[in-house]
Image 1 (cartoon, rainbow, N blue to C red):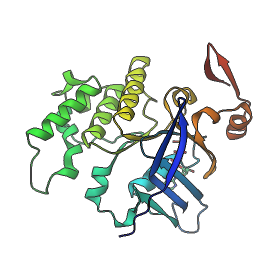
Image 2: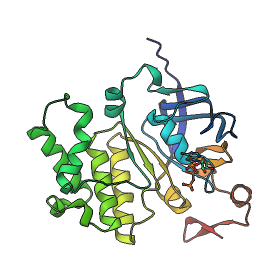
Image 3: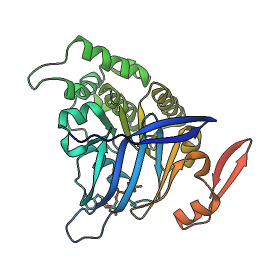
Image 4: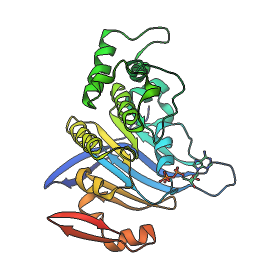
Length: 274
Ligand SMILES: Nc1ncnc2c1ncn2[C@@H]1O[C@H](COP(=O)(O)OP(=O)(O)OP(=O)(O)O)[C@@H](O)[C@H]1O
């Protein structure tokens, strides 16, 4: 088996951290249909182990597509994807299910599961094909519900939840998978301010516990508050990838969004005005 270790150094909150990349996109190009224009063009990107990386960019530039490629749901036209130093194509579905989980932008729910039954689906990569979840799986699922503050919802019908409640449950299902790499596609879009803060605190805690997080967002403030690393994408290419401290400048964001954007310091915090 080919295995490679790449080590990078970065400064986060004044500390020099040395990390290897947990996920690597190596010259990735992708199109949804043969002979159609490329959605991703020669993307080179490393996600350091233990980092919290946010991907930002205008609508339709390929942010979700990048997550789907990491998950192996889509295959690159050119290039390779590496998961903790292993070529992705050598990993089984089960290994990938134990390695990473996704909080999608929109989850299609078709069965009237209870919240607990739905969350237990996250244990699938750990169960053999005919076995039912055991006591440990239930304990992990209940702990995930607690982490998102939804423990009182365990027996509720998932079809009868509000959009925001559902989103918190979807996050709990992803945590029940106990991923080393947590992928989130715009996780705070439908949430009220309280739940936004809940998710922000949860992601911070998870990162401190050693989970690597890669998330798309349209909220630069979330990146400034939380992220060690930022990726800015433009038309299927990477405009910037690096530490958060250097990511946001008025010129760069104006170029990214083709619109005047100003980055200012207010009360010691970086804010984006548009
Ligand atoms: N299943 C599909 N078939 C064909 N084209 C697709 C498909 N899914 C996405 N696309 C196209 O690929 C491009 C990238 O889409 P993607 O969803 O990755 O963008 P995004 O950056 O995540 O956008 P947003 O910020 O709006 O969520 C878009 O032009 C989109 O129309």
